[in-house]
Image 1: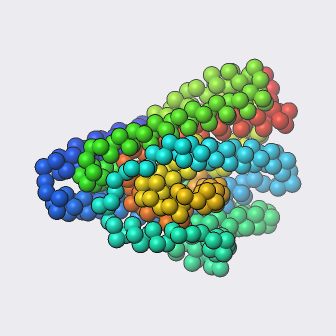
Image 2 (image 1 turned 90 degrees about the horizontal axis):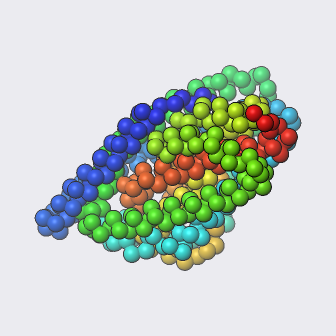
Image 3 (image 1 turned 90 degrees about the vertical axis):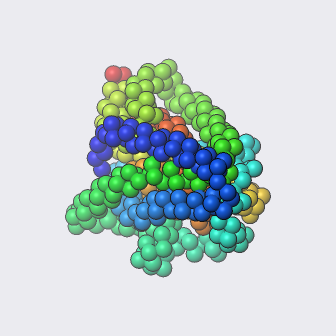
Length: 421
């Protein structure tokens, strides 16, 4: 799929989100300090509708995004016998990096516990208690029911993302196997993916309002003290990113040796753009160019890099465990926070469900929203972290670019296809 570079629009959206957050803080603080509790509750319930609208619009596009992007990604692999060796090496890197990212996030979020102590006791307690009842356990039988679809229409209607992934994988493999007969379907789904991704860009225009609603409701009910928790949350996540960077660079050095600094210089510009725009898609064309200039063969770059954009989002993967565990800690969902086995199961589910949302802005929150409900994580929690997601999105997007550049260079070296420029 061709990805265009639109840093100006992305930068403008980031600015609007920051403005929405600042206004939300100001309005929420004013309501909290100068109005009675009954008025505060009414205001919070009503302003939170802005966040609810945004979340429901995101949920609306989950099914078509998963189906179209994942099927097209698999179909573009071409002759599986020809690309099997390279694809196998790439997937080995992707899965290993994803597990490390998810596992590191899970360990650090349990150490820092950024969600513990968040005062959300006044936020829709009836709904929270109902969700807590549903989160008492996630058995193997329930997992199988969520994985294996009995009807793809039912899966799409109920946003069962795991079932959609399973169907999409089978469909994509079959589509590749039928050869030329499947080409019209591939083109149609590719066009559909472009259309739905355009819809995503429209939905993201509402993000500033969603941020404003989430932040103002939270501050109105809890006061400015909640920002201290947000600071701990963002700070601990960036500490995690630093540790992840160190691990990625160590592994990258094992493959590239003294050429690693040269690679970092090549991708410095794409990474800076990714950080400022919070969009790894915005730098895709530039990253392809720089990887080829670095010495990677174009056939490796054209195969591994697009695949990596679907399967190798290291920063986003780590953020999923951070965000989900933050919500679980904030809502005191002991069935998750107190059960390491449940956390590992959730980690593995994220490993699967994250593979069908390539190219979606703020994809981590989409996955947390779609998958978290299986474990009793309330959507209101996603609305809470949406208020400061822009800060985390910058760091994880830049990490995604680094991870994909290292993966492409490593596979090129592994295949003996890395030349000196």
